[in-house]
Image 1 (cartoon, helix red, strand yellow):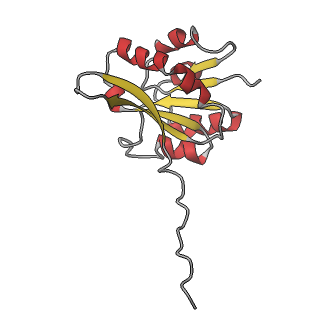
Image 2 (image 1 turned 135 degrees about the horizontal axis):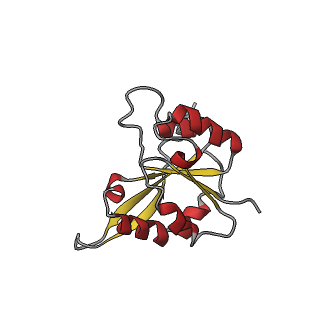
Image 3 (image 1 turned 30 degrees about the vertical axis):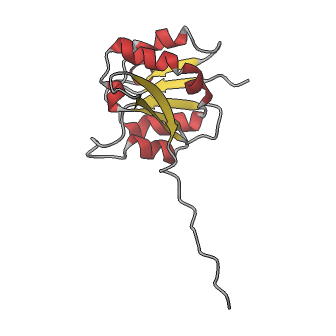
Length: 158
């Protein structure tokens, strides 16, 4: 059985790692951009390396909207076949304890993201419940980055 591998981008604190490691499947590998590389390293450097190693799930809040130069993280992950989980700003703005609660509550599902075809994109976001004050977290498969199948109309009668 392949070990599950989780890589956290610098936008998420490394303090989450030991807490998640404690609940993860035996043998899971956790790493953080600050631990494996250094702060400020360009995505263009480390994402291709993870793609070459294979099997990583990148967990990030970086949707590439702030990138003024270079390639955007989600585009690089797709280009190099790296499955990635984009954490919404709503979740990212939560207190550390609430963020941890979201990851712990969905950890089994997050682990399963490493099992499928490499290069997929998922979103971790808040799902509002009726009443507006309570919420839960959900993971959504993002198919919007995949090429659409052409929908040709069948030929008409001759």
